[in-house]
Image (tube, rainbow, N blue to C red; front, top):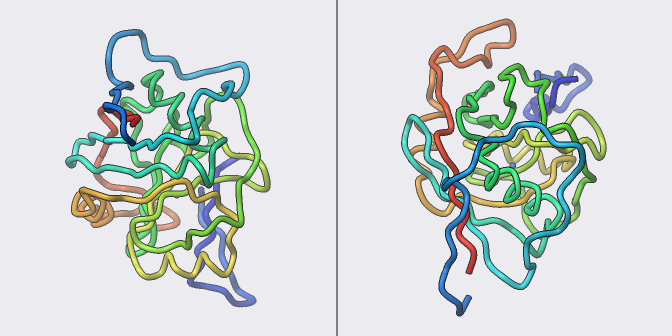
Length: 210
């Protein structure tokens, strides 16, 4: 099943669903040695420390951006994202869906919008953050179906998601928003006019813990 993010600017009877956000020295993990793994039997055990701060530096074929991860507000989601990043899961994965002035979506190893890590986990909704440009949230195919696919809000239309807040917010862009917007400006086509006409990939994700 595809991971969906509702085209929230059409909140009418004709609403559409388109296919588919310290004091100790920092530790860097996520793009070092070890083989890449893309399938797992179960969700990871809790590995992060909610008392610590986490950020992810995402290197793409269009440039880099940094995500502040909301470990206190969405610990299960951040734990999964950190785990997958450290397993090199995201390396080579494409941005498979782009909706101008709305979102860019990635995290599917198949590039189809239907793939995932082999496990799912529950939503973490009702936190203090709101959807808007720079917010990072999970894509899903219904309640409690989170896996590895996530999206980044790129434009004002993404604020409409606050009317249907069904996607776990787990981070925000703190650096490199110009890269995010450059990805969002990629020409699109396809049946839903959201398929990138240029291949843009995640090259690595490095997790910083402090």
